[in-house]
Image (cartoon, rainbow, N blue to C red; front, side, top):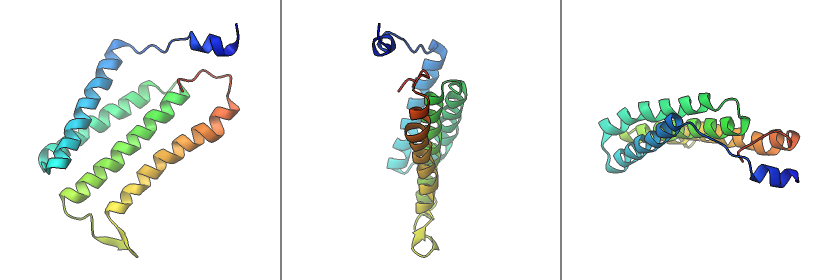
Length: 137
């Protein structure tokens, strides 16, 4: 049996408790973004805590599978960037210039770019050097 066929027959099992947490995470994330869209400031700000906390827990739990860890860390920084951007709009500081045309809202690019760099490292450097390692993607 070729390595490709062998990989197709492998399973990535997620314990049901972890899966339930991931599904709950999606609910919190949706409520955070709905609150942002509807400008419900208290709900949006409160939803940052469980959304970000669960994403950190998920990343921690998947730390032994590097492909999962990288993707989950990218989600952590995405939620961080998204939450920062949301708060900058909620508190009306998003258009304040911090440096030569760069506004407070633009500072959200720092964690967004961190996520891109994490995934770029995984796909361009780590994965090609570790072809034999099990990965979920």
